[in-house]
Length: 318
Image 1: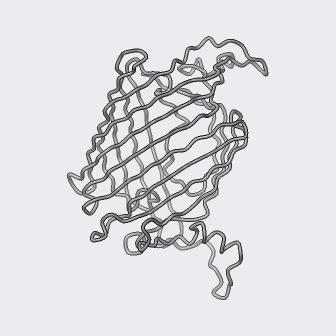
Image 2 (image 1 turned 180 degrees about the horizontal axis):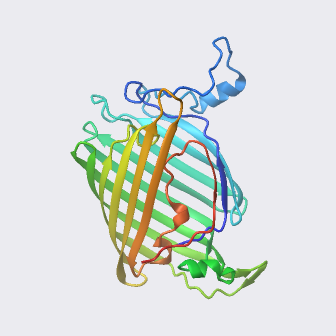
Image 3 (image 1 turned 90 degrees about the horizontal axis):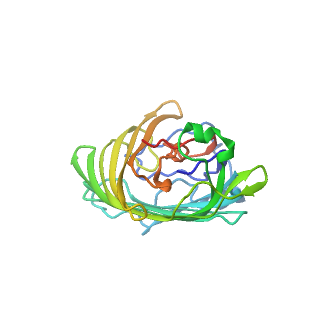
């Protein structure tokens, strides 16, 4: 897929999410707040954006806002806004609240994008409905397929990636914490202004990244014992997704497989949390360039405050 030679991002999370004290116990703070301490204007501003950490189930949707800032060589400096909304569809059952996550960004070089993720819980979490939408027009880099291509600086190609993606999925709980799901995915991608870069000089591209529309069916099998999907403090996740797609540009089919194993360990009574994660992405067949696995684009298991440096990575095409 797209190679990211260097990525540096800082995400400032001004609020933590919780929903029911009995289902999601409070984590002890590292530093105690004096009982006589009065809130400042900074506290009031942060509370307005949702930093109080409380979920108000009396609201139709309880929103929190997390501003972000980042830098990449391709996009330069940029800012973003993460919005998280919690709401109840099943008030009679003590299940975690449904969630709407909207993530948007804009960069100095004109890159912009927005993604939506909505997870709804029904019948006491017996059923789940997931919608994912992503739209972006962003600067990107492509080195080719495999480690040897990625190690060759002469393969560096820069372009503007235009992408539209839509993915719904319905999941049903067959046994405690075990879900199976079926869904669909449609992704359109286009590479604008593709050119090879050596130093500060641009040359004609020798890679061809054709516009394409990939659509297919996805099945999912997962064991999910996490106490809260968006901000877990304990539990396991083992998920395997398999998709069969048809690509209109090559007029051929291909398949993709995603595997994730994660564990969250609450250190109570000691403040803190240990989380680890293993992820794998695989593809088979005539996979288009935008659907190839990208090791630098996997989903992190913890999303509180992140400052990460990801080295150059290469897609693994099987």
